[in-house]
Image (cartoon, rainbow, N blue to C red):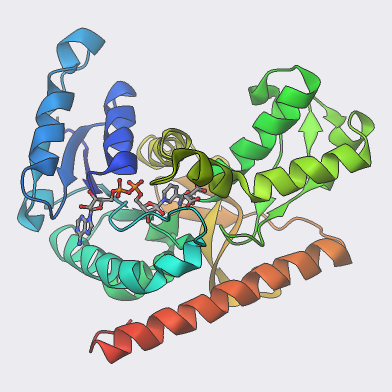
Length: 318
Ligand SMILES: NC(=O)c1ccc[n+]([C@@H]2O[C@H](COP(=O)([O-])OP(=O)(O)OC[C@H]3O[C@@H](n4cnc5c(N)ncnc54)[C@H](O)[C@@H]3O)[C@@H](O)[C@H]2O)c1
Ligand SMILES: O=C(O)C[C@H](O)C(=O)O
């Protein structure tokens, strides 16, 4: 039986942690690809040597050449630069636009039936670039954002109440940026609405901390950004696709009228299965929540326009 093949482009902090997570969960053979000669090969060999200890026997290959990624079932794009303290994710647009364009184009050429899971920032902008560069249908190009942001929200609620995070159900929608929208009205602990358990003033602080979740880690690390939780979130998405689990996950998907938005990648809950984005879930939102989502969408539209101008000025476009 043919084993599934997953390519991870970018063998840095997130890419290597994603590769490890995929292997530990037994999702298939892994190809780690990076432009830095030897980096992916070294990390792949290291990962391979953890197999006998951890009890898996998958193939792990490191490479600097796209030809080795051929016929992948899923391609995860983590290539690009990470932000430093004081930077926003949008500050990465010019550098990462070119990198993600090239990665998606090459990956699509070698693996025309693959799914592309984008991780590089600014996430929703890079999803749009990957869609245009790959020429794939939108159901096979989507981004990791909401699983991570929601997991941060769930973690802070769980800490506050001294309960297990997995029993906190909560979504963060919108763009993966400073304007993301943690939805308090749809947050439950077990089956109890969170605002029955935590006072409003404290909930507001938790919402603000969630929105700054990535920046909090960037300021602690001093160089680079989070990678364990981002990798775990990405692996959960890949698992849902490869095992056709049809998990309902908040993620960046291409909207075509949903939530009143079109031609934009945006974080909403979607059913993720073997066909990729199989369905989007439209929540009933109030005026305040919709206004917050629209503010978030505007930020993304501006950044996409900047990325498009930048790529056009380099003779490349989506
Ligand atoms: N979506 C999310 O939730 C999320 C979470 C964490 C990080 N990120 C983003 O993911 C990206 C990677 O983060 P990281 O911490 O792994 O950074 P990192 O610097 O540790 O790794 C990035 C890797 O990309 C490689 N790379 C650069 N250009 C490349 C190219 N053209 N082809 C192949 N590889 C290339 C680099 O050599 C490096 O090894 C950043 O843009 C970061 O902002 C997103
Ligand atoms: O904050 C970052 O720049 C990385 C990532 O988007 C995160 O949320 O951890």
